[in-house]
Image 1 (cartoon, protein in one colour):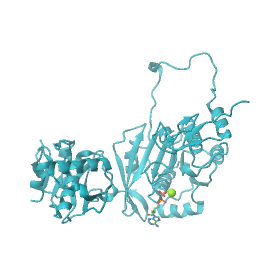
Image 2 (cartoon, helix red, strand yellow; image 1 turned 45 degrees about the vertical axis):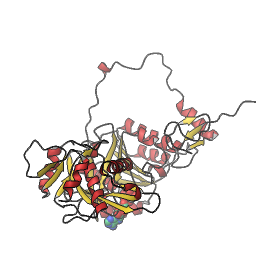
Image 3 (cartoon, protein in one colour; image 1 turned 60 degrees about the horizontal axis):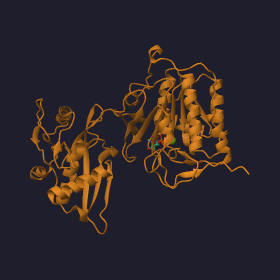
Image 4 (spheres, helix red, strand yellow; image 1 turned 180 degrees about the vertical axis):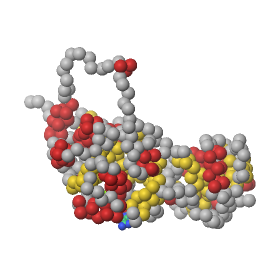
Length: 451
Ligand SMILES: Nc1ncnc2c1ncn2[C@@H]1O[C@H](COP(=O)(O)OP(=O)(O)O)[C@@H](O)[C@H]1O
Ligand SMILES: [Mg+2]
């Protein structure tokens, strides 16, 4: 009797294995490996069969290949163009992720409206909302235009059918988790479904040279719900950050096959939709005296310096001490706390420590270390820091304060914002009206910061 062929697949990353495992060896997640059904295995075998049997070699010498001439299309939003690396690339597949209510549909409907006004035919496919609901949003965003076509649909086959009926130049899929292909016998949102659909969308984008934007939901853990394979397949991955309580939204690039991922896009949620933030200066901190536990720093978001406020709460712990941070890497926080215990003899092991970065921004560079330390010290001592001082510096494991990039650009932004003093790892080469105090050892800052 022939043995039944079995195949297991990781729901998080798509790794396949002939036997069940508790932990996925590819992505390290636990309990994500599930058995595929007979139909799913047959489908995979069908799609992986080689399509060409020609004997001549197909690969060409690289010297004979003409490079792609990328003509970018402006999305009508300065900030989105910036994160994309200068505009939308024809034939590219872009994934926009973010938590519910952050503004994914709003942004893409606005962009769809902008492009339709330039005469492009846009197809907006929504599996989440009815055409009537989208129309309401379009009224608010001023996105009404006869070139913007809405399709309320969850079957991929119908979307493909629709593409054959009219010449569309731009497609939005809202969202990947609601779309399903009839050819794949598994639930919408599952790895196999998402892989099939993304593959099909990629084929459409490349063969017709149409840019396709896909919306994806994010789980609480911060990754696109279900399969991470999606991130590997698409050309560009952008994630929305920000606190839904504030009006600021940040769109950060995580992957871009056509540009750098240095820049972020900054938007403001208003009654008219998600608009390019007019001026980001001064949006991420409150002017005036600081409360104990608050410290200011300047972070670089791509080419832009932004003054932000870091808040710390150090409170006596009852039981196992908690460490929790929003906007700062937890491992970085643990490292800084261990350093404070060792170098400054602070008994932080018996305290809970919470960190919050204002405006929902995520700190991605170590240059803010010194400000985090200053905020912790300020909360621990219950003494406010001066609202005229900015803390700049990376802290090493040995307690040294290290140099940071773009110091003069950060100081210039401080001048514009009316700050007077900076605690820095090294003095700036260029002249600056900011009074700089050099600190190269973290243990020394205690002497300075409360003066
Ligand atoms: N009439 C309105 N005026 C201002 N903001 C609104 C209005 N209606 C909805 N919003 C904002 O838009 C957000 C919904 O955005 P949406 O694009 O649907 O999110 P997503 O698609 O990411 O789930 C809401 O959280 C709300 O803040
Ligand atoms: Mg939505």
